[in-house]
Image (cartoon, rainbow, N blue to C red; front, side):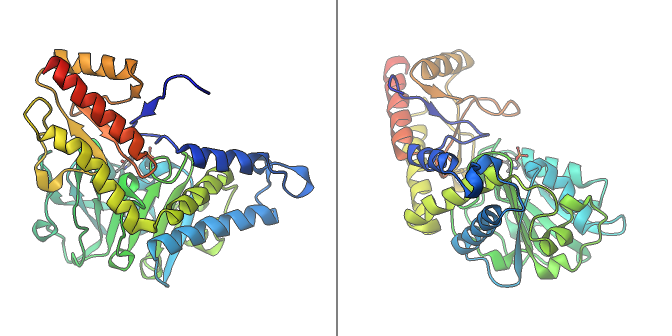
Length: 359
Ligand SMILES: *Cc1c(COP(=O)(O)O)cnc(C)c1O
C-alpha cells in the first residue's frame, strides 16, 4: 500500500500482523475442492470439517487443554456468553458467585441475573483487583466467575486464581492465549476472537466434562453446551472464516514459541509504555502497579486539554484508537498478542517525543 504506517491500538478488533493477513489472503484465494473458495465452503464439506478440527486441536495444543475438557466453537461474542453460560449452568435455585471488579465482570454478573441467583463474591475499586483469598464464595455456588483482564480499567490478575471453593469460570477475552494457563484449575474458560484470536465472529468455550454434566438449560440449541459438545460445534452453520483465521493465529503463535514466549512478549511490550508512565508524572496511571495490565495500558496526561492534543497529534502521526474507555477516561493502548513490537516501539517513541514537546 505504501505511504505512512498506521498503527491501531483499538480495544475491539485487534490489528493483524502483515504476515498473518497474507496467510489469510492466500487461504482465501486458494481454490478448494470443486473450485469454491474458503468463504464459500459449505460447513458440511470435508474441508470445513478439517478447519473446525484443526482450529480446535490447535487451541487445545497451545493451551495444553487436558483430557476431560471440550473445546466448543460458537458465535455471539463474550457479551452473549455472559448470559449463555448462566443459562447453561444455572437455574433459579442455583447460586453463581461473581467477582465484580470492573466494567466487564460487572456486566457479566448483570447479564447472568435472569438465569441464576447472582452472589457478589468481591467488588473492585478501579485501581486494584480483589485477591482470590478475599473472595466470598458460598459453599453452595455452582461456579465462581471472574475476569482475568479488565480492559476498561486496565487491570489484570498477575496470577490466576485456583481452588476458590467452586468451579472457576473465567472471561479471558482480553488476554486469551497471551500466557500459559492452568486449564485444569478451571471449570470453564471463554473468549471471543477479535482481540487475540483473529477476527470477530467466533467465541471459544473450554469446559470440563464435570461441569458439562451439571448443565441444566434450557438454552437455544446453538448455545447449548451439551448439544455443541455432542455435535462437535456443528449445531448450525459455524463462522468458518473466523475459525479458519483463528487457526492461522494459532500457527503464528506456535511458530513464535507458544504461550510462554507470548507472555514474555506481552510483558516486554507493556514495559516499554509503563517505563514512560512511571518516569516523571507527565504520563500517569491510577492503577496500583501490582495489577497494571500488560494488555490494556491505561494512562492519563496532566489535564484534559493536553489529552485532547495528545489524541489529535497521535492520530495525525498514525497512532489510532488511543482514547480510553468512556467509563474511565484518559488514554488506553490495547496491546493484544498480535500487536507488533514495532508498533509498541513507535508509540513509545511518539509518547516520549510528545512529552519533550509539551511536558
Ligand atoms: C472486549 C471484552 C468483552 C466483550 O467482547 P465481545 O466479543 O465484543 O462481546 C468481554 N469481556 C472482556 C474482558 C473484554 O475485554
